[in-house]
Length: 302
Image (cartoon, rainbow, N blue to C red; front, side, top):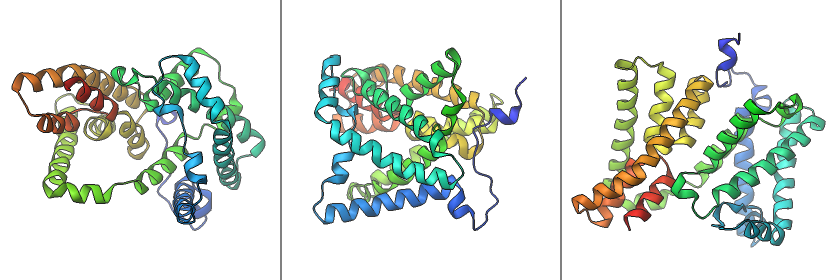
């Protein structure tokens, strides 16, 4: 029988020491994220195209036959090699300092990188948005299949450092936060988005704990998944609240099912009510649980 502690999506213990600055994933995610942001700034300032060259993935390909994927990978092979080496160097150095042997990390990370390209390629399918096949969801489903159907070698654990990658991604995501765009949208748009997100999250949490007697951790990530950005929010918030793995899996399932239903329902109701495109777009954008699903619903509306 598995220990309940082992089923929790682990997070870094709150106790802090000076050694945490170079021994903890949290701090390494910050250092790595800040370094990449500064490197990108100086790269663009100097006219270098290196950062742009390695910022590539097949997610935006919109392919409708497999041959297009191989043609894309072949034409951009040097960029993918540079991207792989770039991340391999930084993650290998940082994990080595944290006590992971490079001889075990490198093979595992290499396999993980190949899987990530495949996952983004699936997300780049022309019709992926209609089935809500976001890369995070595809990755989760693929991980569930591999972990429960095939025996996973123990040496792969060294490269499957999920929290580290997510935390680094969150830091980099913050660097792309469109402050100017949000300011230009005006206080009304900001207030609307804030009110909807907060009320939705708190409502789901309240109803889940009060009436359905859900675990507070489960209700928390369910609220984040329903109010912020679906699967990605649920995955990022799971470790923060110490949610169990089954909480995360259940949340992802519910969010995806709801998103798929709303792709059909929201455009239909918008047209039935005769809503203008701008109003319908605002409603769909703040009601859908994921960017891909929102985009698919908006396209369906026309």
